[in-house]
Length: 155
Image (cartoon, one colour):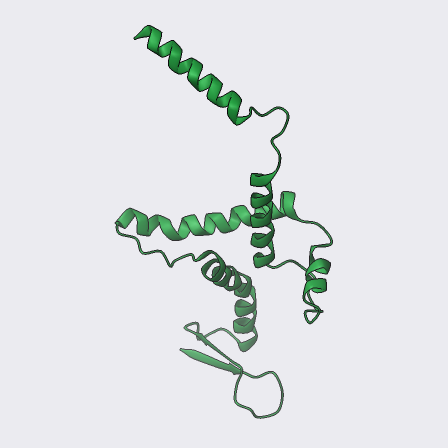
């Protein structure tokens, strides 16, 4: 194994990061580049676990175990795609900075921002007035009663 110990500054305070590899031929620069390239994947897994609870379900069957994590990652993907297509607004990061003024460096929405916006959108849609083209509960019940009456005549 090859171990690369990194620290951010020249002051001897120990090390900030340890990179371990089984590739004995890789240079230190190559190991750092591999780590940097993989970082966004690790962030995705961390967010999926922390925000969506991916991998925390207690499954009872083999198929459930095999499907649990892929389904959670699918939900993660659907959330990001929804946000990119429908949920994103250029002012989202600025609004977050206004709510959290200590977070001055925020320039892009985080996954937690995306899920919060999706939740707000779903909740708002549930409590919005019914569109003119949608049947009301009374109209739906009338149709169901007509079906029941028609089936009673056939029986």
